[in-house]
Length: 268
Ligand SMILES: Nc1ncnc2c1ncn2[C@@H]1O[C@H](COP(=O)(O)OP(=O)(O)OP(=O)(O)O)[C@@H](O)[C@H]1O
Ligand SMILES: [Mg+2]
View 1: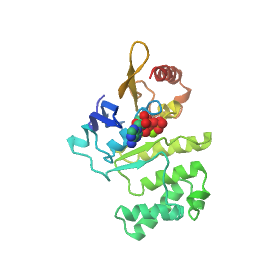
View 2: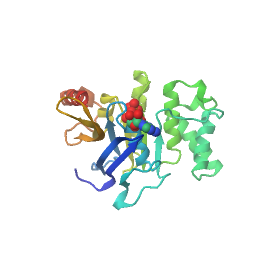
View 3: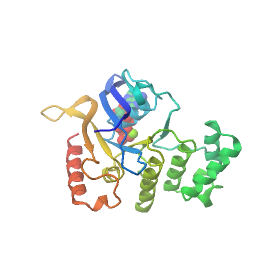
View 4: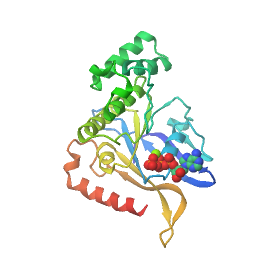
């Protein structure tokens, strides 16, 4: 892969409750470029339930420390908590605040003035097609709407690296499509933006990502899992001609890669 390395996960290991969860997980994210177009990065991290995806996200976001290994940004600079936006699996919004206020609070917490935060919240509500839901409370939203607010909340003050844990779960097909478009749109707002998506949804991950990483454990010859997950496979979708295309899901190469990935998934 070419392009400057924007961040690297280097030999990250983590043990929890006496069990090895992550075992020297390593990968690099490169600046992917296209002539004449601003192209952020989208990486998909796939892997079976319980393999360690959420733990890995927490380490990348500097919310947890690994037992060994490191995560570094551009030119090896360490990543500090607060430099990475995270949309968690259960997207916690403040229950007693309206949608608009949730966005404003996020802006103020990140150093915007009240007026700037209000302006930004309004813009994002429109962009995320939530303009008529600003005065609703989180409990009054659908799952897809809540998911969009959670993403909006993370880009009130956009960070170069935004990690999303299962952003596609619990969405109906049209909400799924909206969230997928949104992810691409947010990534492409800046050449150096990177969005990392953790998901079980292989098709959705393939459709939006430029690179896929498969996290999984090794097995013994008789099929027993060994402890500790590592990157089992990297799929460069740019190289395969499967990145940055609206019609990508209709390509035969998409279906055959999807099959290959599903097959691989079953072995993990
Ligand atoms: N605090 C903890 N103490 C002990 N074990 C833990 C702890 N937190 C997580 N684990 C274990 O670590 C493993 C990885 O958990 P993680 O939440 O990262 O999985 P995941 O890949 O995100 O799964 P899912 O797709 O279901 O969200 C799981 O087997 C889990 O039981
Ligand atoms: Mg998880």
